[in-house]
Image (cartoon, rainbow, N blue to C red):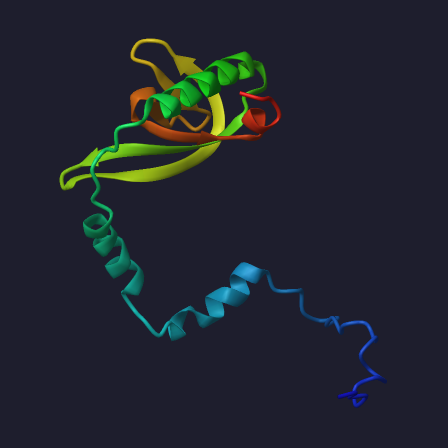
Length: 142
């Protein structure tokens, strides 16, 4: 179907008010906050996540361990540029534990106990890591 009803105005510039400044996206979104249909939904989801995400620590295969070891070596070689990585790791809690994903720039690698420390202070023990992803691992054959 060829609809030409708006052909005369479709390419005109968008109107901007001369007397009112453009509202930020954040302010525009705030206008609709009072109309949230599911009040308390976010809190309920967060409370439920703790129950649903309980997991047991998975034992890594020898191949997975070797792969992580090679990635740690590559990471140590790239420390001068503080590479950005994404880590899937196990974290213990009062209900057992859960796997979480964290992404950020690496500040340093601590030796004892071995841990990756990120620029924002986040510290993840190497023994808790299940998977690491980064551009620095993709560029070089491991």
